Image 1 (cartoon, rainbow, N blue to C red):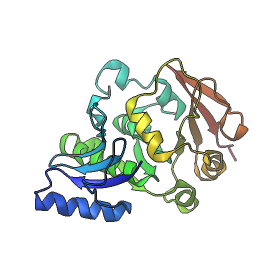
Image 2 (image 1 turned 180 degrees about the horizontal axis):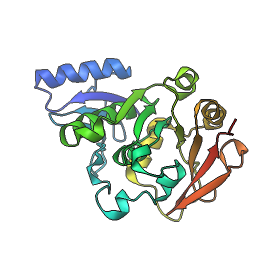
Image 3 (image 1 turned 180 degrees about the vertical axis):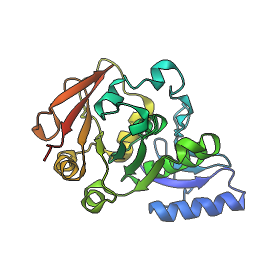
Image 4 (image 1 turned 45 degrees about the vertical axis):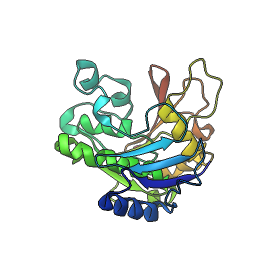
Length: 253
C-alpha cells in the first residue's frame, strides 16, 4: 500500500496548489496516475472537502463529517449518557475542559463540544489530523458556536502532554481498540483508520502521563471485555452499548 495526495479536478490550479501544500505538510508524495495500484490510499483535495480514497474500492471515500451524529434528540443532548457521566459532567454551566489525547475520527470530541465542553483534540497520524482539521473547518461554517469550543492539533500526545497548558480538568484517552474476534464487522471508517494508524502499541504509556496532567480525572474508552489500559484497574466504569469508559479520578489533596 502507498499513500499519496491528489487534487480533483486535477486541472484546477488552486486545488493543485492546496494538494501540494498538504503533501508537504503530511510528508507525502503527490499521486502519480501511472504508478498507483488497487488498494493504495489517496488523500484527495476537492472543491468542498478533503477525502481519503482507496483505489479499487467501490464504497464511498472517507470524509469526516460530524453532521450525522445525534446531538439534537433528547438522547443526544442528555447529560445522563455514559460518556457525559464518565467525564464528570453534572450541569452545563460547569462543563469540564477536556484534552482528547487520541482523537481518531473526532466523534467523541465533537459530542463533548456540543454538550458545552471546551475540547482540545490531539491526533498524531498526519492524514487523520488533516481530515479532522477539514471537518472542523466545515463545522465552523454551519455550527460556529460548537466549532469555537473545539481545537484540533496534530502531534504526538506523549510529547504534548508533558507541557500542555492550561491544565485540563479531564484527559480523555481512546486508543485504537485491540484487534479481537468480533461478532460484527468493524465500521469502514475504523478499518481505514487502523490501516493508517496501526494498533496503538504504546497506548499504555499515555495513562501515567494523563494522570499527571489531569486536574480532576482521566477517562479511558475500552471494549467491554478488554483489560484496563496499562493493567491499572479504574475506580469505576460507565457502560454504553458495545463500549465502556474506565474512570480514574485524581486523588484529592
